[in-house]
Image 1 (cartoon, helix red, strand yellow):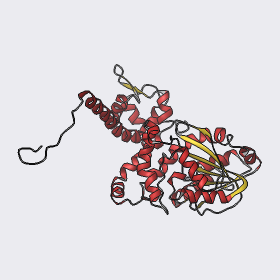
Image 2 (cartoon, helix red, strand yellow; image 1 turned 30 degrees about the horizontal axis):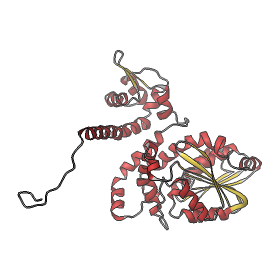
Image 3 (cartoon, one colour; image 1 turned 135 degrees about the vertical axis):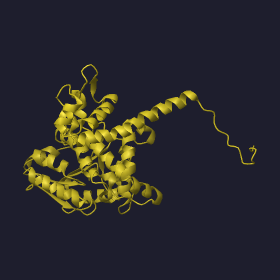
Image 4 (cartoon, one colour; image 1 turned 45 degrees about the horizontal axis):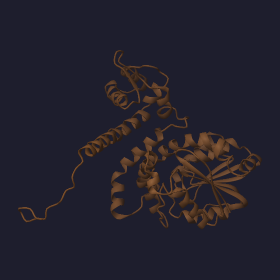
Length: 364
């Protein structure tokens, strides 16, 4: 069939008006979430949430005064926060309140559910828009050091609360015989340590053990060294620039990979090097994003978030390295186990999980 101008007609599918309106509604919710993510990052950065935490009902003028900001901006920000349910507005009194439950998520950095770092990291990705668009066109990778600097601080603030809540109390005790070694004095490597949060949490808990953190990003390693000195742990927690395939040392009782294996260009090569670095009875602790083994198992809010982060951070980072496997943040336990077995590990088991992570134990 052709049109009056002689061009082929396009047969458009019939539109289900109810489905259309439902999807428009979903897109509007996402639109609000997208701009609100920026405002959440601003609230975190400017200390607005922290000033509201535990303060009870407060006016926009008083909040602005306490945070050194301008009332007119704060008032508009609070309107967004009230519309999203982050704060509660009292129209009679003209006050706003941050409930204790919301404060756990946006104000308390020691809370295991604090997400301020996530929004900081996401904001950094918006700043990388041009670099990412070009990577889509060319297929080139985007190295960790090519990202906006807020990615580094955002990621450590995202992961540290979970590590602080679960690592010493749950994940390490789930490994066979590892806590006993750490208490008596073990040698530990933290590969892909970033700013060293996981390394220092372990070093603080196990005074007789020694810890070595390795990462490709020299800026992160310098920050980790500074954090170790400030915590008084620099004698037992050392940090050096090295990749997962060439980090130094042998005979480690424990090697840890925290949310790092899927970022590596050659995860099999890194796992093989880790296996070779372990003592005969050594253990690999692998912490990775929680995911099912198939795409359809990950079609949920957590999977949506991780696929998003993987698209703009994890996969580009892997593609920028040697081999460039591009494992992705939603690899799942089955694929991760395949990587570990290809690297020579004979024993792999899941020992724990959270809504955001799966924890695997691997032994030679």
